[in-house]
Length: 110
Image (cartoon, rainbow, N blue to C red; front, side, top):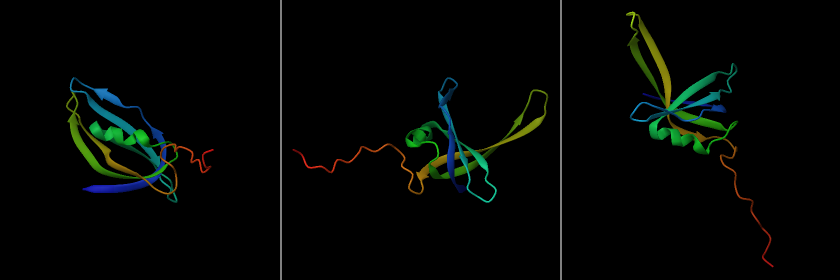
């Protein structure tokens, strides 16, 4: 099942690589603009890490994500549960520019 969230980017983590197979992940944190704002971390993995390259802090974005959960048993036999929000799409909302644009020169050539 897919979900959506909207908020302002407050942190874009550096890409991390794990294991011999080169598993990649990158953290993105947004602050919602609700009555009671929430700070929400999203994890982008593998080729989805590259989606974050053109975004900047303070941009208002909409993120499509899946909820991922898993069970893990530690060496002492205690069962623990983990959950993360795995982003798979991100789009700019509003009028915030994503990347710097070249200035437009409206003057005619000499």
